[in-house]
Image (cartoon, rainbow, N blue to C red; front, side, top):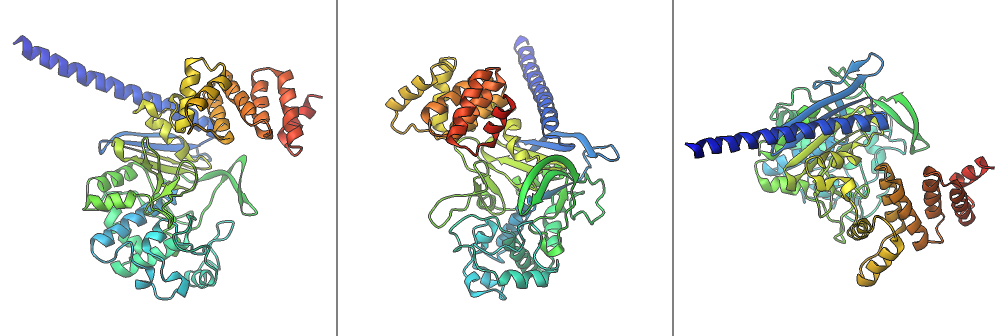
Length: 491
């Protein structure tokens, strides 16, 4: 009898501790999100967290509409922009499972009105942005021509190839236009209807649809931006603007879906549970980074550094992820090895949530916290470990000792500099100062290292030393506007 009650007590205690942990984690995430929104000036945000293929957290924050002070709720619909490409990848894999195509087929098997140099390009290369096709948008990301499909197609076909297929990664919307035509041709229905019937409806995504700023979208969260395009370059001017986007129907394989975090969670659960793709091998193929002709993997940047079949990927040893991103405002990360997925939708172009989703994951897996060294290279982790043991003192001596005992130990100026700024973000200015000082010793001919060191000295109130190092930076680089501006202000 006593044993029975002991078992019941243990089960109750275990369940209670799990509930307390889950509540604590949820509250901590809420605080993190609110701080991030304040810092980045994000008006509204939706969050969904999936663990072990079930929805664990669904939250809404801030304003969907600033003008009318309408709060974000679970029904608020956000544009997910280029995250749409992940749906196109699933659609292509569905057609492959139906035996209607193979991803390594040349596109010339399905599309005939193309230039000769396009004919060897494969469907896989279209999906992974490695085709080398010319772009059907201009430097300001406006669709070429007068907005009609026929005019756009005729114009892009006359442009030269960017490179040989499979040679490089280069983000490309033309390939997704062609994928839309292939889906329409092989399915017998327009690609928007095929995706609606075979993904939205199957996953019971009741609020998800194709649309843009011209469409009436129930509970639309609208769109704001601090990013403006000046002469083909995206610049953050720090001011909040209304953002409007028009996506012609033929262009909507590249971008065009509006959704909620709850609907996207349903979609991911359906994908991972075999409702959208029947074979596990299909999902694995969908999320596997595509290799270039020379066996390299490439992507957007140091975070999303690979690209699969419509899905950007985060290629790394620890906690790799498949990570669709859209419009510099929305992102979702699927961590296959961790049974975890995180969705963040915002109504601010320029919020780039992909850069803080790992931190949210860190509330479930503490080793993913930046403060615990997550994201640092193997060599930087070695240096960090040595510095922690010595309270961040004698950084050059520690670096030199590691270098002597490890021939493969090497760090770039940019690596060290980036880590220094991470430490400042964590309010560890004194530790950052040691890192920036180390950089000046390792790279004494770089103006940038003295600039960063001087900036941190000023933050800590060491003005005389800051002036000395800004002067050194300006001496090495007379064009250093930041150093010149600081020194002139102190005269």
